[in-house]
Amino acid sequence: MGSDGVFDAMTNFECLALAGTAAGKVTRNSGVNRAEGPMAAAGAVVANAADWWRRNPGSDNITAVVVGL
Image (cartoon, rainbow, N blue to C red; front, side, top):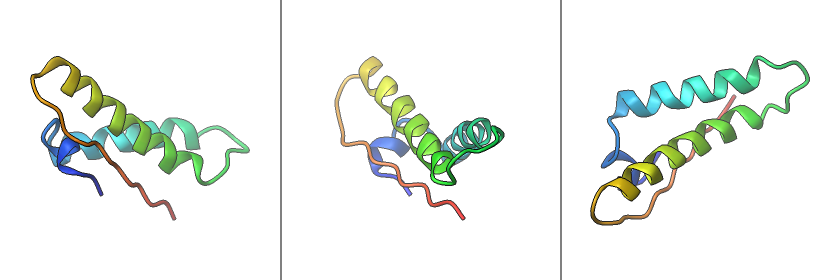
């Protein structure tokens, strides 16, 4: 889930690809806390959207929630 500040900066597909890549990098390491994958995914999405807003005029709130199983 994400706010419009995320989806103004990237498409659904871009968001999912970025989140999946970030979560995958973390969860491949042995001994990782199960919460670290979703946290990395949400952090990557927010960071990417924040970077987009810094480069483009305007501003918006940026929120991302990733739920892991």
